[in-house]
Amino acid sequence: MGREQEGQDASFRSNWSSFKFSFAKRLLILANSENKYLRKKAVRQLARIKKLDNWQFNLLSNMIDARTAVGLARTPDVDPRFFITPPLRYLGHTHNMIVDVMKDLLVNLHAISQHPCMDYFISKAFSDIDAPEKFTEDMTYIELKKSIQSSDELLPLCLESLLHHASVGNYAKDIAELNGLPLLMEIHNRFKDNVEVSATICRIISYLSMHPELLEELYNTGWIGILARWVKSDDVRISIPAAKALANLDSDEEPLYKQRLYPLHPTTRIVRDAGVDVVFVHGLLGGVFFTWRQRLRQQDPLGFLGKKGTPESITQKSSYVEPCRTKRKRHCSSDPDIIEFMEDLEEHVGYSSLCKEYDVVWEDIPTNTNDDAVGPYSCPGYKYNCSESDDYFTNCWPRDWLAEDCEHLRIIGVNYETNLSLWAPICRVEKVKNLTERSEELIEQLAQVQVGKRPIVWVTHSMGGLIVKCLLNKASKSSDKAIRDMYLNTKGIIFYSTPHIGSSVATFSQASALVIWPSVEVQELQRDSPQLLKMHEDFLELTKINPIRVVTFVETQPTVVSAMKFKFLVVEPDSGNPGCGEYYEIPLDHLGICKPASRQSFLYQKVLSVIKDILKHHDKV
Image 1 (cartoon, rainbow, N blue to C red):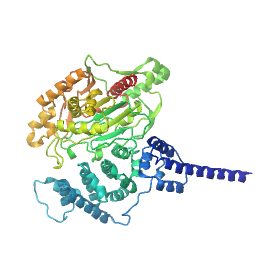
Image 2: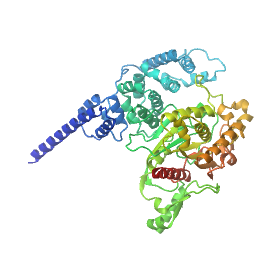
Image 3: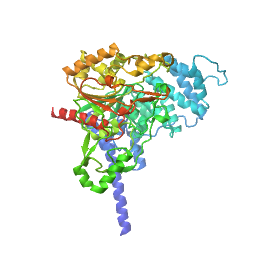
């Protein structure tokens, strides 16, 4: 009887597996329907199919077309076996042979583009290693030669050069046309454990995704499956560009995110449209991959002449903090003394009494406010420490906290490069942009992803606030309805230490011009600059015509400049105060002001409450 039952169970499992396999093949037919709604529903159903045999998944993966593969990659919890195994064209190549293939690719790219940066890199990286090094004005030549100790170190440097090339204009498309995708796949497989290499390749792929006509080539070379895995990475330098690439390649769902824009949420297909767009714009020396990370207890000092013009360059290992995933209770503070006090209080008065009778003050509480400031500065006890949760360090609080605490948002991160000094390497193909040019570029790219069709909340740090003000001033005067709506639908702006009338950074750099040689960005930040004063005057007029909720946080602690061994306020309170809306002075420095210490920080909770209020008002309308 037992054997008979086992045989029946095995027969049932086999029949059930065959049924699911047949159902999956039927769904694949529907996934190619002309009806967009039917296509998307079929993909969602297909992604739910689990526990097929490997041979069945193998057959299905070879039946799936590129568009369906992207839809599956953007569906949560999809089985990775749905994606084809990447073909390896260079499997028999030695490392030196791969270096030669990379050299040929770079040479051919330069032949097409005549990109001076590519020409420079090729001439230095692949020159005769026995050639004498002589002192010239080209100091980076010597630095480059010293950094290449072996061929193992050459490929990552080639990838950095390729990344810069892909970020300029439409050069990324040439990489695919010159068969660079199989080469990148081979390098990815040989450097799987190198996070820096993976992050660089992922950003290159994200630039390629801005050309949707390359979808078939990306699919055939196995990159859709890799992106589906990368989008789940704990490292935001990998997961954020991967999400952008898949969004760009998804013709059934998303608009096109160009160079400066990264979708932070949602990263998967959604059923309901967002009610509010939240756009994060970083400041001088910032970046979408590190400006919005949770604050460390010991904040790194600001180094003016860091690599690539920023001490937090994503190419530096020290810039990324590994997530710490430990199961523990969520506390209202990350301060050990406060945590100990609250645990003792909970132990003596009881958890239920604590919830009912006590309020908990938020962390990072302001030391000074204006009359318009309304908080909230605390939360009821029942919102504190209510459940067990994975409370881990985040390198991107907008994506990891805001998206979870407030539904129906689309969150976009803006990324652009800046320098404090003109001594830093500058690409001669890309013109150095001032505030006006940056805002014009941003307007164009935001309009392409339909920012302006729904309420907008801007969250800005430092110079990012100036860019947004310039953008809104321009949008308000535009004859293009889509662009003008960007101003009319702006409902809120968060300023984290924006120098509305200039910064002491510019004064410092001017006094030390022979050493610093201040960049365009720094020169524009001169205190009481007529341009900044006029920009702010125009902005204040806009807030009167179209009421905008303004919330301002300003630093009160000096920032350490490690290169010069002294401290100073990057943004003084009088410059950081816009003269409208809610104003809060926070006892933090310029780097820490936009990095909440925890989810229970006032710096985060205030932003969350503003966005929730705007979303609630929009839902009523």
